[in-house]
Length: 291
Length: 291
Image (cartoon, rainbow over all chains, first blue to last red; front, top):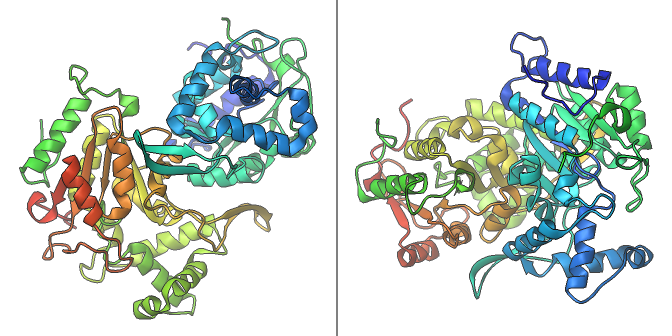
């Protein structure tokens, strides 16, 4: 059998993950979980891909400039929530879903990460891509439950992570059906209807999946309710916390520099619940796939 | 090859459906659609199963009596929207999602249809069950996009129709995550957040599926936007309208007797768009599976 997780070093973390996958998918095991109940949920930014900067924020800034209304990260920060909403309205609203999808795909094809120079879809963590693949191979259905915009992520995440569009769940604004000049279309509004973070994450899982997961992975306190909800399953479960400890190969931080999301509650719960904390610097042999 | 639709008579309707499935799944065909884009959406009540009475309404009336606050269909009708919301709050709200699921499953196991004496899951149309199976076999992902409550349907539709819970989309109320006496739980509120009917159906398809369908089936004007949205795909599509014409074996009606949903706009669009109108009396050899 080839190693299903070649980008993971042979630490306890890797051993624990492989032991869990084996136990829940082995009909002879006391921890066996029927395939239909093998649901795994993943936060995206900071858990499956680099979140410094947020790809969606980089897109919004580029798109605002393209639309003739440029703003800088500094202006955005100084402007607070009002500036953020104005940017969102300008770059994500009053556009059909088909047009928005085209705009995002065009941006994704050319944009590059400011530090690493890679396309944003190539900023996904290779060890997590391998984990998704190993889980899929073991009969799991893997879902993304992200605070990022669903329409933004669905334009690139399915290809980059091998997860079909309907399993990419995120924040949403209102959408209106209308029969326009070009026939039936869906128009994106400029509000934020659902912010898919914190306590909304288990609610979104219930709405979108309709089943309780047995595996959950996150990296900030915004993911804590999702991991708590998963841990309370009647089945054996696995909770994973991605800890950003690698300033050389990625970033090292405990508080998200843009949105201010912390990790103290999550790390405390991880210690109490014997959840697995993935130490990027020591557990991962590779961060990004070779280009 | 055995007939994939044995409960359908050999009419033009059956021939057209089989020809469509063959064309879009044949790589040699000019109408070929890649498997990942073969999405089919179905209304439930009146399209996949008998809607006289609505199973969910029968459940609500039985549940109200069980809770010591009985009401009759006549009182409900006289009380208008206020009485309907009160019944909904009493029977669907202030209960955890796990508890609600148990309550519905217990009801489903014992309740019987007033005219046919069959369990409600056995009120699904056998010809449509065969169609779902034939589509799945041809690489389609089949979804239910219903005006009924998602939590109610997910308790029985997956078993009765062979559609996994996450592909059962319906109306929803608010849900709150909380850490209660028994650990993390999701509490159902008593409001109606999304009524999954009319223009909301294509919006729900966008949110839940993230792809445009190439097949849609419905039976009232509430399904028209879903069929219009599907018909505007860049691929070849199939639109199906279930017409209730069989008073002997099911029911014959053009206007839903409870909610008043009509069929005139849908039948007009079907005539204009050359959509297929399924005449239950002539197209279906069998309505329900033998018990």
